[in-house]
Length: 208
Image 1 (cartoon, one colour):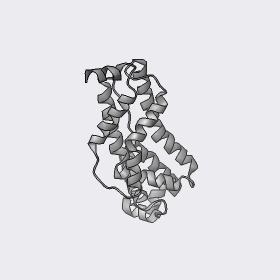
Image 2 (cartoon, one colour):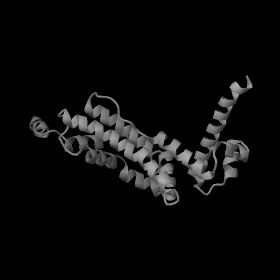
Image 3 (spheres, rainbow, N blue to C red):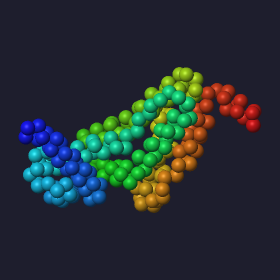
Image 4 (cartoon, rainbow, N blue to C red):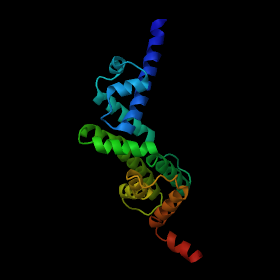
Protein backbone atom coordinates (compact mmCIF):
# COMPACT_ATOMS: atom_id res chain seq x y z
CA UNK A 1 0.00 0.00 0.00
CA UNK A 2 2.86 2.36 0.80
CA UNK A 3 4.23 1.92 -2.71
CA UNK A 4 0.85 2.88 -4.16
CA UNK A 5 1.05 6.26 -2.43
CA UNK A 6 4.70 6.93 -3.30
CA UNK A 7 4.17 7.90 -6.93
CA UNK A 8 1.44 10.52 -6.30
CA UNK A 9 3.50 12.01 -3.45
CA UNK A 10 6.56 12.20 -5.67
CA UNK A 11 4.51 13.76 -8.47
CA UNK A 12 3.07 16.36 -6.08
CA UNK A 13 6.53 17.22 -4.79
CA UNK A 14 7.91 17.54 -8.30
CA UNK A 15 5.05 19.84 -9.30
CA UNK A 16 5.57 21.97 -6.19
CA UNK A 17 9.28 22.32 -6.99
CA UNK A 18 8.46 23.20 -10.59
CA UNK A 19 5.97 25.91 -9.59
CA UNK A 20 8.36 27.37 -7.02
CA UNK A 21 11.20 27.41 -9.54
CA UNK A 22 8.98 29.02 -12.17
CA UNK A 23 8.12 31.88 -9.81
CA UNK A 24 11.73 32.22 -8.65
CA UNK A 25 13.20 32.34 -12.16
CA UNK A 26 10.56 34.87 -13.23
CA UNK A 27 11.26 37.16 -10.29
CA UNK A 28 15.04 36.81 -9.89
CA UNK A 29 16.34 35.32 -13.12
CA UNK A 30 18.69 32.40 -13.51
CA UNK A 31 20.97 33.64 -10.74
CA UNK A 32 18.48 32.60 -8.04
CA UNK A 33 19.97 29.95 -5.78
CA UNK A 34 18.83 26.35 -5.47
CA UNK A 35 18.44 26.96 -1.74
CA UNK A 36 15.92 29.74 -2.34
CA UNK A 37 13.95 27.59 -4.76
CA UNK A 38 13.92 24.67 -2.33
CA UNK A 39 12.75 26.99 0.45
CA UNK A 40 9.91 28.32 -1.72
CA UNK A 41 8.86 24.76 -2.49
CA UNK A 42 9.19 23.83 1.20
CA UNK A 43 11.44 20.89 0.41
CA UNK A 44 15.02 20.00 1.29
CA UNK A 45 17.78 20.79 -1.20
CA UNK A 46 18.43 17.07 -1.69
CA UNK A 47 14.73 16.46 -2.37
CA UNK A 48 14.93 18.99 -5.17
CA UNK A 49 17.97 17.22 -6.63
CA UNK A 50 16.12 13.90 -6.42
CA UNK A 51 13.72 15.29 -9.02
CA UNK A 52 16.07 17.49 -11.06
CA UNK A 53 19.71 16.54 -11.52
CA UNK A 54 20.96 20.12 -11.74
CA UNK A 55 19.91 23.74 -11.78
CA UNK A 56 20.21 23.66 -15.59
CA UNK A 57 17.83 20.70 -15.78
CA UNK A 58 15.36 22.48 -13.51
CA UNK A 59 15.53 25.65 -15.61
CA UNK A 60 14.93 23.63 -18.78
CA UNK A 61 11.89 21.95 -17.21
CA UNK A 62 10.53 25.31 -16.09
CA UNK A 63 10.86 26.80 -19.57
CA UNK A 64 9.15 23.82 -21.19
CA UNK A 65 6.34 24.07 -18.64
CA UNK A 66 6.07 27.84 -19.07
CA UNK A 67 5.82 27.80 -22.83
CA UNK A 68 2.74 25.58 -22.58
CA UNK A 69 1.04 28.20 -20.44
CA UNK A 70 1.33 30.85 -23.17
CA UNK A 71 0.88 28.58 -26.18
CA UNK A 72 -2.19 29.43 -28.22
CA UNK A 73 -3.73 26.87 -30.54
CA UNK A 74 -6.24 27.58 -33.29
CA UNK A 75 -9.24 25.32 -33.58
CA UNK A 76 -12.58 25.45 -35.27
CA UNK A 77 -13.84 25.87 -38.80
CA UNK A 78 -16.68 28.29 -38.14
CA UNK A 79 -16.98 31.96 -39.04
CA UNK A 80 -13.58 33.30 -40.13
CA UNK A 81 -13.73 36.58 -38.23
CA UNK A 82 -15.03 34.95 -35.06
CA UNK A 83 -12.33 32.27 -35.12
CA UNK A 84 -9.54 34.78 -35.74
CA UNK A 85 -10.90 37.11 -33.08
CA UNK A 86 -10.96 34.28 -30.52
CA UNK A 87 -7.35 33.49 -31.44
CA UNK A 88 -6.32 37.15 -31.28
CA UNK A 89 -7.80 37.72 -27.84
CA UNK A 90 -6.26 34.53 -26.43
CA UNK A 91 -2.88 35.32 -28.00
CA UNK A 92 -2.73 38.85 -26.62
CA UNK A 93 -3.98 37.78 -23.19
CA UNK A 94 -1.23 35.19 -22.84
CA UNK A 95 1.71 36.82 -24.60
CA UNK A 96 1.15 40.22 -22.97
CA UNK A 97 0.35 38.84 -19.50
CA UNK A 98 2.78 39.40 -16.64
CA UNK A 99 3.78 35.74 -16.87
CA UNK A 100 4.23 35.87 -20.64
CA UNK A 101 6.43 38.96 -20.42
CA UNK A 102 8.49 37.48 -17.58
CA UNK A 103 9.06 34.23 -19.48
CA UNK A 104 10.07 36.10 -22.62
CA UNK A 105 12.46 38.37 -20.72
CA UNK A 106 14.07 35.47 -18.86
CA UNK A 107 14.51 33.33 -21.96
CA UNK A 108 16.05 36.17 -23.98
CA UNK A 109 18.49 36.93 -21.15
CA UNK A 110 19.55 33.30 -20.79
CA UNK A 111 19.58 32.30 -24.48
CA UNK A 112 23.39 32.72 -24.85
CA UNK A 113 23.91 30.42 -21.87
CA UNK A 114 21.36 27.84 -23.06
CA UNK A 115 21.31 27.97 -26.90
CA UNK A 116 19.71 24.54 -27.25
CA UNK A 117 17.00 25.40 -24.73
CA UNK A 118 16.42 28.72 -26.52
CA UNK A 119 15.98 26.86 -29.80
CA UNK A 120 13.52 24.46 -28.20
CA UNK A 121 11.63 27.33 -26.55
CA UNK A 122 11.32 29.06 -29.92
CA UNK A 123 10.19 25.93 -31.74
CA UNK A 124 7.66 24.87 -29.12
CA UNK A 125 6.34 28.40 -28.53
CA UNK A 126 6.42 31.16 -31.17
CA UNK A 127 7.13 28.89 -34.14
CA UNK A 128 4.52 26.30 -33.17
CA UNK A 129 1.86 28.98 -32.74
CA UNK A 130 2.62 30.61 -36.08
CA UNK A 131 2.69 27.30 -37.91
CA UNK A 132 -0.73 26.41 -36.53
CA UNK A 133 -2.07 29.81 -37.55
CA UNK A 134 -0.50 29.47 -41.01
CA UNK A 135 -2.22 26.11 -41.55
CA UNK A 136 -5.56 27.64 -40.63
CA UNK A 137 -5.00 30.62 -42.94
CA UNK A 138 -3.93 28.30 -45.77
CA UNK A 139 -7.24 26.45 -45.49
CA UNK A 140 -9.14 29.76 -45.53
CA UNK A 141 -7.20 30.86 -48.61
CA UNK A 142 -7.89 27.55 -50.38
CA UNK A 143 -11.60 27.92 -49.59
CA UNK A 144 -11.66 31.43 -51.06
CA UNK A 145 -12.37 33.13 -47.73
CA UNK A 146 -9.02 34.96 -47.88
CA UNK A 147 -6.91 36.26 -50.75
CA UNK A 148 -4.30 33.72 -51.78
CA UNK A 149 -0.88 34.61 -50.43
CA UNK A 150 1.93 33.04 -48.43
CA UNK A 151 0.11 31.77 -45.30
CA UNK A 152 3.33 31.74 -43.26
CA UNK A 153 3.90 35.43 -44.02
CA UNK A 154 0.26 36.20 -43.23
CA UNK A 155 0.60 34.41 -39.86
CA UNK A 156 3.77 36.36 -39.02
CA UNK A 157 2.04 39.59 -39.97
CA UNK A 158 -1.04 38.94 -37.85
CA UNK A 159 0.88 37.92 -34.72
CA UNK A 160 3.20 40.91 -35.07
CA UNK A 161 0.24 43.27 -35.36
CA UNK A 162 -1.30 41.69 -32.28
CA UNK A 163 1.67 41.87 -29.95
CA UNK A 164 4.83 43.59 -31.18
CA UNK A 165 4.36 47.20 -30.02
CA UNK A 166 2.50 46.39 -26.81
CA UNK A 167 5.05 43.77 -25.80
CA UNK A 168 7.89 46.23 -26.35
CA UNK A 169 6.18 48.72 -24.03
CA UNK A 170 5.75 46.07 -21.35
CA UNK A 171 9.31 44.78 -21.72
CA UNK A 172 10.63 48.28 -21.11
CA UNK A 173 8.23 48.82 -18.21
CA UNK A 174 6.46 51.62 -20.05
CA UNK A 175 2.99 50.17 -19.76
CA UNK A 176 1.10 48.23 -17.15
CA UNK A 177 -2.31 49.02 -18.57
CA UNK A 178 -5.02 46.33 -18.55
CA UNK A 179 -5.62 44.41 -21.75
CA UNK A 180 -7.23 46.49 -24.50
CA UNK A 181 -9.86 44.08 -25.78
CA UNK A 182 -10.90 46.42 -28.58
CA UNK A 183 -7.45 46.32 -30.14
CA UNK A 184 -7.70 42.64 -31.02
CA UNK A 185 -10.86 43.35 -33.02
CA UNK A 186 -9.26 46.32 -34.80
CA UNK A 187 -6.24 44.23 -35.76
CA UNK A 188 -8.33 41.31 -37.02
CA UNK A 189 -10.55 43.61 -39.08
CA UNK A 190 -7.50 45.31 -40.61
CA UNK A 191 -6.01 41.90 -41.39
CA UNK A 192 -9.24 40.74 -43.04
CA UNK A 193 -9.37 43.88 -45.19
CA UNK A 194 -5.77 43.33 -46.26
CA UNK A 195 -6.37 39.71 -47.22
CA UNK A 196 -9.91 40.09 -48.53
CA UNK A 197 -10.57 37.89 -51.61
CA UNK A 198 -10.49 39.69 -54.99
CA UNK A 199 -13.64 41.70 -55.53
CA UNK A 200 -14.83 41.39 -51.93
CA UNK A 201 -13.47 44.76 -50.80
CA UNK A 202 -14.74 46.51 -53.94
CA UNK A 203 -18.24 45.09 -53.44
CA UNK A 204 -18.21 46.21 -49.83
CA UNK A 205 -17.12 49.68 -50.92
CA UNK A 206 -20.02 49.93 -53.42
CA UNK A 207 -22.54 48.93 -50.76
CA UNK A 208 -21.43 51.90 -48.69
